[in-house]
View 1 (spheres, rainbow, N blue to C red):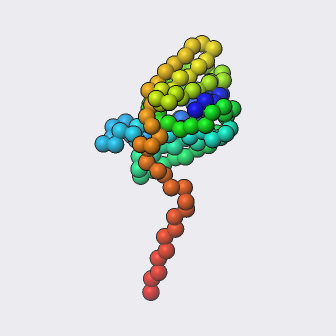
View 2 (cartoon, one colour; view 1 turned 30 degrees about the horizontal axis):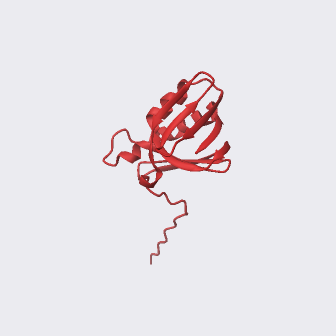
View 3 (tube, rainbow, N blue to C red; view 1 turned 180 degrees about the vertical axis):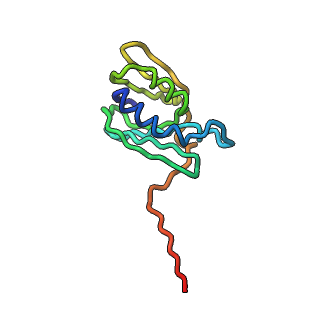
Length: 130
């Protein structure tokens, strides 16, 4: 997975999601945010299994892929970076490299296969009473 995104766009998306990401959980993958890149569309997913946030961002995509990265660590790093384009590259071992003109930063990630599937279908509940 390879793409470029403005720091401000990524920061705003992470800021919206960080509130629902559990710091401690019996399911460690839930402390991550799922990144899924298809073309120029990046979808971020965060959940605590009760509440989920899925947001889409326009990016300059180069190589499709998906992986999950630690939400708090990523949020803290992106918050400290200047508002410049960030180039993000995830390797086959799910290690994320964030490249800027100021330096390179690496974060270990996890396989997207471990992340729970979040249904985006609308669920309706019907009641009938007499």
